[in-house]
Image: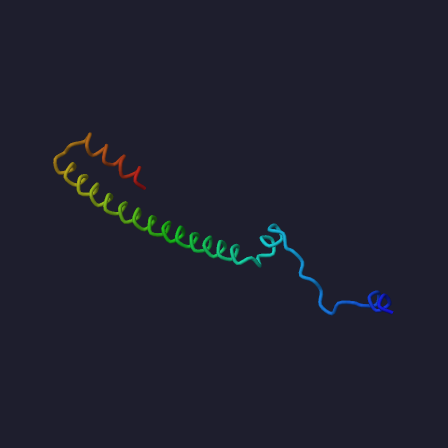
Length: 96
């Protein structure tokens, strides 16, 4: 009688399965992978912002350099210095 009950017995809850590290990383259910994904997104944002700030700074510097070269061109034309004027014209075209 004891054996018959044991053969018919089915557990009501299934056992927990072990999860491989590869499965966890693939499914994204691991809190560590979630943190690393958040860090990656944060770093990507910081890098993008840094790129924008660098571009703005370079654009501003280019404007100041253009103003400086414009003043030098004006002085060179007033002094009738042709070689200096040609050199400054070449610098302005290179700056563009």
